[in-house]
Image: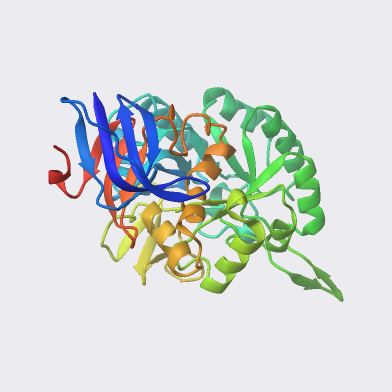
Length: 399
């Protein structure tokens, strides 16, 4: 089966141009600039009508969506959350856990790992992102303090032995034993990410030397510049701007990062060192006023106000209610980022971090056919995942 997209504005990591793209089965066959591709009698032709045609979005940090959380311990929750994000352009995803009891963690990891073998009707599950439980109690945010602790080699090695699909692990590097864990993660192919951390510059210097390469939800849940007696100490945020070896997750929902700070982060880190993430909880894609962060059984209550999720005291965000299209829209409209760079931060940069950029993350011949069509306001019009169309607004496009 061949599908041809005509009259599209094609977005690559480096440029945008008018052209056409053909897909055979689950791979991109050909991309042409300016000219159209001549259809054969049995081809499906989709007139993009000038819409942007971009790679499917890659989400590295999401706790749920559509009324579901990845800690709910049910197949319906995992598939439901994934399908919600698929409708908003996400074609590859890392379900993300919260600090929890060992029993709850193992149960959910096993379930997500099993469902990841499913290929139909939802984004590709590329692995799992563990957020905790080795976090700073001072920077816990909405994480449940009952389960926060220091790294234990016997414990984290046991977790990985039972769930080798862990791709990212968020850890506070200043904790006792965290640097040893950083080296272990590096040696075992896990991205060691700094998050929920109260570290200072010297701690981050050691973290980078010991395998840490990422920053979890940059500027959120981390220390900033502080004064200790007469001495000013840079925190994780300033250190993250300094170290080029650290790639930053950014929750560009228009709430977690104010516009001017978003501009600063984008200017200093650049699109090659930023991965846009939603950090979404179960209320993403819903119109609700209250929700639950974490599992229905053991989660924490959340209030939804002004496009954001908070713990009831309003002292901290509780994840976000964003989807990937909102992130792209925010960095373009509030930070003035070109669409090529905005898309890069949600596609090829996370693909490169996960070492899957050889097959996904860009529009090129031979790559897997993960494709999103959207308009100037980043409204999603069509989502193709592995060559199959799972969401489209205008059914009459195809003929």
